[in-house]
Structure formats: structure tokens, C-alpha cells
Image: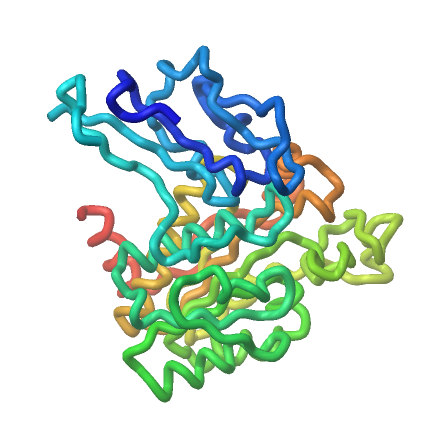
Length: 81
Length: 266
């Protein structure tokens, strides 16, 4: 997981072990930042993950977290000091 | 987080509310219960009433809701959650009991309880999750199942000649004098979820102000028993449930309208 020191934009962190693969976050993300993972988690679901190519496009709007039924998403927003 | 390179502060916009326990929900993927429980937990945190809130769970998929909330909760007999919440409120008026009930609980076996709790004007809050089906028992017809809708007990679709018509709970209860705030919201889009949160918050504030019975009906998807994928379930909800169950506020007494205005200005 990348830390804040490497970030230039807002970002989301998805807890892949909580995620049940409903993919509502992927369907509602306005920037298409999220995608289904290519692996399955311990519960046997395909979790959502951040598409590494589009990390910088995340605006931190929080719609993914709003629609997530499993509270798996944490949204981090960078604020000017 | 010791060094922030870009002269920027990091803030967390969304995370798991403190009023929810660590362990994950047991619900199926894409279930609306997860969203609704999270909204309730966020509101409990925002209103800072975690020490006083008591969840009264019902029977159905909502049965384990007290397992997820990081505050007191108890389980009532099938459909009797409003009666239990009434007892809590009357014995301990400083507590904030709320019932979390599904449609199989509130609109079927518990119809008498909710109607009389509303008629008495008990100062409690009810969160009513309507997914138009019996979720936990395997997708049988509920009183709220739409006409023509498939369920395991109506395999050819619900026929009014045989099974009657779906109950519109909000419309029915809003005719009772004791109710202060009755609203119907849905979870089919981000905008709708935000409105749902506002409505649930107003319902809790109604109770905090001691104005009377508040009830929020939440139209919620049940992808497993509707036999559709989670994203399609939300579309199905918008296409089929919204025309029969119109969203909106069915009863807002003047005092609640004043609260709402105050909230809006804040």
C-alpha cells in the first residue's frame, strides 16, 4: 500500500478481505478509477481494486464509499496546508 | 505519515464509522442492509448519541443488526420490535431506542405493532427496510412484493386475485395522528443514498426533540433473491419499485419541518 508521501492526488484504499465483490463502487465511480481484481480473496469473492494506471484521476469524491455495502472503502483526501 | 512531501495535509473523508463493529457484515454481496446499517451508524456518530442509542432488532436478514452496532442492542420477538422500543422509551426516557425492521417483519407479522405504536404516538424511531421479498428464508412473497413479481412462493408472479396487493406502509401510517415524520427513501444511486441519510438523521432528531413517532422506509436491493447481479438490482429497483413506492416525505409535522429548516441552514 502506498503511503501519503508518494501521493499527489486523493486516493481510496479498499480492504480486499472485507470486499464481497458486488462491484457497485466500480459501477458508480465517475472517473473509472476502480476495477475488479484478477485474484480472489479469502471469502472467494473477486474484490474491487484501484486501477494502478488511473490512480491519479481519483478526485476523492467518496461515491465508492457511499455505495459500498460492506464498509470496505476508506477515502483519503489531500488538503492544502 | 511523518513527512508529507507536497505541503498538503491528509484527511480521511470516509471510513468505517465508530458505531460499527470491526467484523464484516454477513449479508450477500450488494445487499442494501449494509448501506442502511452504515448510514444509521454514521448518524449515531454525528449526533453523538452512541452511549444512549439502543437498537431493537427484528426477525429476518435484519436480525443480526445488533451484532454490527458498537452500542447496545436487543432482539425482539418477530414483529414486536416497536413494542419493545416503546417499553425502553417509557422506562428510560433519556435513551434513544430505534427499531431496525425488514418488510417481512414490519409489514407482515408486525403490522399491528407498528400501527398501534404510530397511533399511540410513541417517541421512537423505526428504520424500515423494504426489499419487496422475504430475504432470509429464501425469497418467498412478502406483503410488499410487487404485483407480477417472481418469488419462490409465487413462481408465476404475484397475482392479486390470489395474493392481494402490495402494502404501501408509509401512506398507510401517515394517516395516523401520532406520527411526526414519515418518509420513503431508496438506495439505488449515490444521490438517493445521500437523501436517505438526511431522512434517517431527521428521524433521529425528531426523537431527540421528543416530537413523536418517526419512520423511514428504505427501498433496498436484494440481489440474491431477485436473481440479479448487484448493479442490475439497483436498476431493477429504480425501474420497478419506484413507480409503485414513490419516494418522498409523507408526513412532516410543523415542528419537524422547523428542525429540518434549522438543519438546512446549519
